[in-house]
Image 1 (cartoon, rainbow, N blue to C red):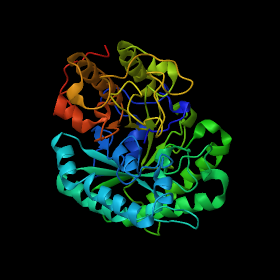
Image 2 (tube, helix red, strand yellow):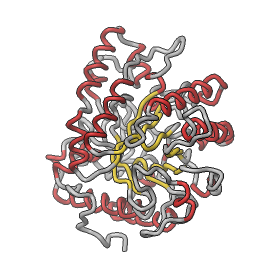
Image 3 (cartoon, rainbow, N blue to C red):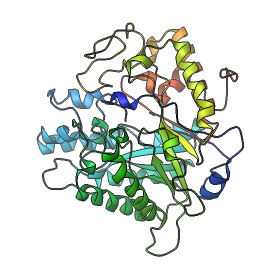
Length: 428
């Protein structure tokens, strides 16, 4: 869920994670799901991106098959095609992109969590909205796969009515988010979160966390942040109290930092008044010019430098999206038909170098590049495990192996056991 990202989605050096094996009191009080020892064990997982919410850069073949360059997101995928054609393509994709075998492979790789993005249109398609629903049975099936594989699931509402960020990964690429523009959008979102919590209330041994809204565009200021805070309060009630009574659930309420420094959220929803709350922060180093221009060593140094800052927050944090990729070279990463900052093909960018050999199939990556990917992967996982852990984006991609956990395992820059380190002292 990184394509068509605004420059504001840059690496935020104000994330937070805690030091070593020590957990702060707030974490010990708030992470109370007995199905996973949050606070003493690290989240190590992946996102199954591009499955139940389309992204052009993850599965470009789906979009290329339309022969229509105006199809740039899931909204236009369903709006600008014949319904039956679009539905057949989506159904084929849902049936094949992620399967039970993928969940088994994720578990075999030593991972313990899967974050599953899903859009609001799986639950509620309103008048004038072209979306095609049908995703929900696949989410339910995936929870069964996770149970049989011993994995925990974070269900992530990736796209909300009106779009909470304007990105194509919200389902609808728009110039300015409209989620907050009217109370109906927010009410619909609240209803969907409530439905999600009720849906899996008997699966708390597997579905341990619900993320009520992915990447709301808090960088637009109070226009987003004011209604967002109220939404987070409402979501807490919907997630933590899904039984229609005063009985609390064991769900963790996972809330995104809205691209704000975690210091902005200091003191928000702390125990003892709030239980089972944790933050999600997303860290990328390629969506603004000065970051994509860093040398490989500077990328590693920047990742390591987050450690102390990440350790100072008063609640638990998971880095819910990140990647060993250091460039935006993946085709359509910045939006379908758009170029890259790295090679200067994105309008307004300044070329850093050639994208040749930095994206596509890992079979063509040089040994030096694969060594860097391993070092960068380790620097990030070491740093993020100073608090709650991490979920890499993403498990697989059709033609961007530098982003793919599956490809990293195949070609060797990701270890078969995520605790195996070639460079245990890379961050000093």
